[in-house]
Amino acid sequence: MKLSGVMEDMNATPVVSMSNWKGANVTVFGMGRSGQSAADLLLDQGSNVTLIEEHPRLELEALSHAYEQRGAHICFGENLESALSQSELLVVSPGVPKEHPLLQQARQCNIPVIGEIELASRFIQSPIIAVTGTNGKSTTVRLIGSLLQESGKHVFVGGNLGLPLCEAVPRLSESSTTARYDYVVVEVSSFQLETVQQFKPWISVLLNVTPDHLDRHSTQEEYHAAKQRIFENQSDQDWMIVNVDDPVVKTMALDAKARVCEFSLCHEVAQGMYLDGASIRGRLQGDREINVHRTDISMRGEHNVANAMAAICVGLLCGCSQEDMVKALKHVPTFEHALESVRTWHGVMFINDSKGTNVDATLKALQSFQESVVLILGGKDKGGDFARLVDALHRGVKSIVVIGEAAPRILQVLEGTVPMSRAMSLEEAVAQASSQAESGDVVLFSPACASFDMFQNYHQRGLEFKRIVQELQ
Image 1 (cartoon, helix red, strand yellow):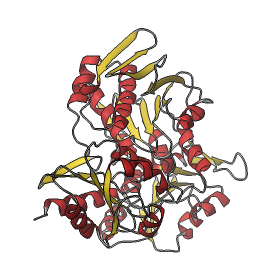
Image 2 (tube, rainbow, N blue to C red):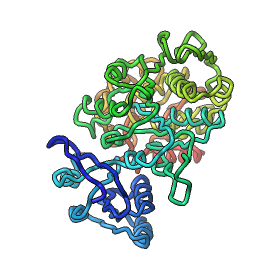
Image 3 (cartoon, one colour):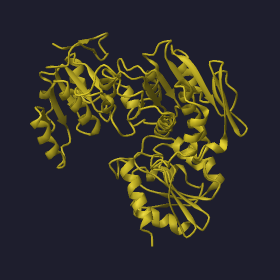
């Protein structure tokens, strides 16, 4: 056996220790992008790979054939248990909950269960910079990538935001004696952190922790515990960058072993970045000081100032100059589906914030506008507390259009706040919102919900919103 599982207690996932991947029998659960990337890496290493997909789709037929041509075994359908009969390791996609019967069977059979980021981290030689938090992960990862690239670093940017971490691993055709990238910057979600074992960032960034994913995590404490795992394997030679304005983050960081770099919008910090009036100031290890003007950050919203401060902390640790970082911050491109300006039509600005998949994200989006807002809200209910929106609605929202599975609960919770209407499709919602908005207003699509009731993901949802808005006549 090439991969061994060591069970630390009866309820724990066995820990995989790698000796030689060639000839190892590995099952990959899920044929999405991360599953494909994991399978590609394992096949490249000479492993015997079984790919399983619980919900086969027509578009997977050609892909399945291609993998079979490379020697992989494909298993579709509901009777997946047989795929584990010879397996020494199960690599699971982040969308699969830990209570899934196949994962339970793997634990009963003492088969280690890991995710794609854990698999990739076993092969990556470059320093890993990992970012997590309830909101702002993708923006901060892209900011870090921009700052490092502007400073001349060769950087991989990926993870939960799109490109799987396995893509950062050098292939066997490349040199194995040198690192492929100067730095690997990766967004990690709570779902991905559930299955880490030895994943060890050189720099970990924890932006914020607010209520989310109660449709997946049984309690908020379980969600916190998953986020906290980003620090789990760090040592005193590593760094953690934490938002000290967030009391949950402060508490979670207390037991971590890594050196601490802080950022704050509210008060001065001893080591890190803080907002001082219109200036972002900071210092690192007592000798590097920085002073960036607030207007150097091109993005809307105080939450993006906090994201930029976290990125600057990383830049300082990686040796970037203030000049290069300011240049990068001034020319940050618009991030798709995150407060993305789509079109101004008859004086009304349409904003796509499809990445606003929880209440806190929508609150931050609302705080980014001085204009009157018509808000399109709703989608798949994740158990969020919509009542937290009430104060923000009174301050600047003239009306709400509600869509999706969560619509009845939203209408009930927010009854009596501002005028509300319900739409049965996104196209109808845009039509209603545009009729309610006047010149100078903003139509903000920030759903505070997941997309899976009507769309494949937030990306498809955002693209559909943009298509509808561009076709307004």
